[in-house]
Length: 320
Image (cartoon, rainbow, N blue to C red; front, side):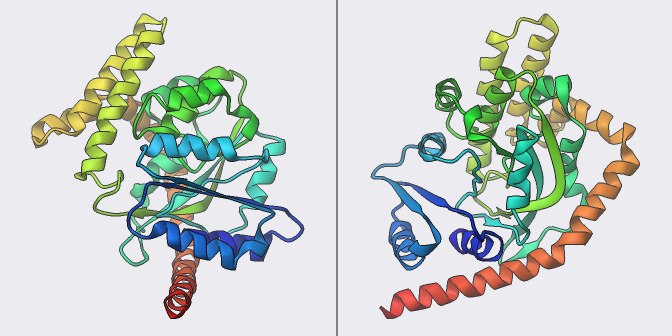
């Protein structure tokens, strides 16, 4: 479905452009490689170049992520995870903003099951907060876990060996480590938020976004590690204390005790979110509603369209 959503973007909005497809598989044993191989063979006319990065053994999310980033040849690129979809809107309108901004931060819409979109407005609080964290505040806030989200689009030239090496120090916080390193290395970075989804983000029982999943527990442990690494490199005593508090909050989140988990709300991350929510309440509520109300029907129809195209492809594959 991820690949079919890429195909939709190219066919509807990509006229006159040249594309490289990078499909990175991290040692899958469920037949993913065969599906990817067959799909790229059937759709090779869409791409000027196709790179299939198939690891024989599982190297982890961060290794797979860095391998894919290294293979990018263009200055503009978009990443979509294998269980997500590109939304139905023109993604190239956002990549063109990179002529003015270093990083473009679009929204996303969550869904679960077979295309059941999450329409609760408050689910997207962290998404729309990206509109208000800019400039100097961005450098501090991003260390504490405030958005940028993993859907951000940025120029390839921002990726350096130092960024790659930093990402590879961790197991699950690939996007977070990437953005933190990019932003701290580029004090004058210009970002903009677009309140339109670029990604349909799948929530499942095993995903990081699911509170009680094993991957979520590991992810919170990795966030704690990330805070410790940053704390060792931080010169400000105040900010070292805040990073320590954030590290402890990450540990609270994985506790089996509801009482202990409650203390995560005293983290600097939640304090910043609460302050922004209170001071910009009406604007944030309006943006949450605009994001959901304006786009969920289009996104639901798009999911069904991609689901049908995927079923047709898989049926053809079985009949060959």
